[in-house]
Image (cartoon, rainbow, N blue to C red):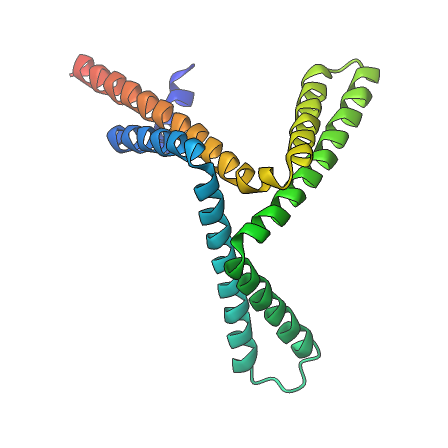
Length: 198
């Protein structure tokens, strides 16, 4: 790496590497704990999602009531959407188990669609003599995950969301930990360069 590129990267990174490192370790710990408590993480995630949906509906309803425009053509649609948000958020909070079952089915269906798109893209890449193995492998993994969810449903509806959230926390934790180590290395290198120059 040349000095200009290194300076640009250094300017984009935070200087306090310790906080990044500790936060990363904490997220790795909580994500690992979340894997063992995936049912509880699923329910907590669904409840938070339901709260956001309910709050969004209430805010949209308040905004619609405060509008002074009598001739607004979309006012009725605005109120209808706000009431749907409130109803959906209320139902999710009222029955988080049922909501997690439905959301898990939606995730499985999304994985089937994404897997199919990736596999078809892999075959297109193969005809063009491009790299096609990774899209094929990722597409097959998507289909395997969707199959596991469908076969194990409704039980998978109780833990899949929590597992995905926990895995995301672990990956983000590793990212922050490694980023903290990189920043530490760059700060140390910069300080050594400053000592050499003076």
